[in-house]
Length: 235
Image (cartoon, rainbow, N blue to C red; front, side):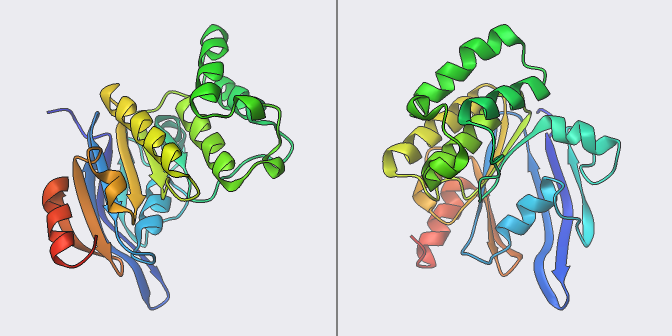
């Protein structure tokens, strides 16, 4: 069995007296997709922010491709291995869609001859081709989300992390997102995403971790967790 790309051990984060996340332990291996599920406020985004190195854990540890995202110089190695799609798109105000992809590709060492092929490919698949010269403020919420996704896919990554990726996407775009994530899995990328829309994870997630008020309520193979969620009345 391949070594886990993501290793999280006992992750906890507290805001004063509020425990936003309590003792989350999680592995994600190459070619595996894990869904973090739960209602809003369950701790999913807190977990993602800690894993991505954006929020320090109160206790516990994270390793991405063997590197700690919270400690330099290892954090640089971790950032190189992880591509993040946050719940709110983070784009540069003065860069067009095309310029975002060029910048991310160059920053992560993608060869020019590969960018020339990959950028038009992604723009076409994500229905961004007609907006390649648009600035973020000229894009809808869904188009900004697609731009952020394209930025994650244009670069090499061992771990792809997405926080509520279907929010803002129409049904055809959600279906396309599922296809793109399945392709990433097939290419050996480890995938972790959060969602409160369980249907999106069907036929995509291999395993699931269900959170409630920061604590792990259930974990296991996707179809088993999904069935237990139905029994709890969560569709």
